Amino acid sequence: MVKNSFFAKFENDLPGTLGFHNSAVDGILGLLRDKSLRPEAKEVINALGEELNLNLKKIKAAYEKFISNMVGHPMQQEIDKQTYELFPDSVSNISKVHFIKIKIIYEWTSSFWKIADSSWNSIFSTFKVLSTYVETAELYNTIYSSYLTRVFELNIDTKTLLSRIEKKYLCKIVGAFPRDNEVLVSNLLYDEELNYDYYSLFPKDSGMGQKTVAKPFSGVPKKKTASDDFFFTEIKGTKEWNRSDSYVLFVKVDAVKAEEQKFYSSSFITLSPSDNVNINLAAAMVRKNAGYQVATRYNKMISTLLEYATTNILKKDFGNLCEDLDAFLYHIGPVVLWNIIQEDLTRRDFGNCHYVDKNNIVKFFPENIIKKHIIDFWAEKFFDIQTSRIDSYINYSKGVAKIRDIYKQLFENAASTRKRNTNDSLTLEEYLIENTGKFFGYRRAQVFRRFVNENLWGHLSEVNSVELVNRFSKK
Image (cartoon, rainbow, N blue to C red; front, top):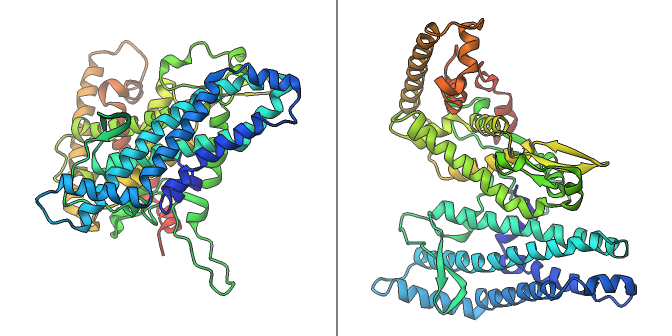
């Protein structure tokens, strides 16, 4: 659910971009203290309590602390200090300096984000009171549209940046600095094989919607490309057999943005099957726009499902497929991964959103948001993979052959079970499809659709098509 409005700005000015928190606090305080407000509105505002002011002040203080350590001379001092502490007996080089910078950026941004995200969630809950009074409803709408929506987008993009660092360098926050528990520390360790350049976190032309800004050229308009209108996964293979639509997952940029607005305005968002209870109109009216508070957890839920699916496909569902498992995961493709996540959420009935429209609760499944998340996941996962690994037909064919053998074995075992249980009128195929989870496993079934020609569930149409490849491949 990444929106480029803030995320793209992080590349060139992380401290300045996070400064929107400070601007939002000042703007909100200005609106709350506006002398033109009617006495009735001021009375409602005064009743909000001191907690609101404390949270607003906490954000300003956290940003002031962040900015005083992350720019200029203080930042350079911290780089020099940590370089000496972590590499006392070795010669400093650019890789080690970049490592220290990433470490400082990760820990200080995590420290600020933790305070800001928690404080804004409390502020949002407090401000909901304003929307329930006629005297302050218009004020709430102004604050909401001018500041709160943007702040929550910024928090989501900040968490995305931190998650990208965690995935790339396999690190996490493990505690706080002994003398200041607001400053978090990580377990990030130096590896000379890794690229710690901060700008490497922002890959260009990766199918993630990130685009290099073109310089003006004599008034000639820039030619519009597919990346202007779509998010999509990049084709890495160069052979005829590894360039099919199975490797392309795409979604329209406008569709993602429209769906995000529905998501943010939702009253209920189910993060687990148990969240489906107590969804009613009365509660939904009070909980409008709850999506902003849930977005971070929703992203985490989808990330967890993706990691769980990809790990279990390679280690549990299809063990020892081939020598290069990561390359074969690329061949399984983002379309299969989308089908797995969609099927899991639909079958277990969670991941849905519920928003109020004309006094009715509308339920919708945010498939465009989830597709965009998978596209981002895919771009990060295979950003550095070598083309030679993707083009290895020996690795590919070995994996496909193993998958087909597994399908044949599972089918025969399931058919034998069916022969012992003929108390219904189902055909063998109907019986096996109805018991997919029991005999094959839902993840395996989607992979079988990709590689097994005559399977129970129907072949993926993308396997034999190159329409999307021709549409989205870089010329």
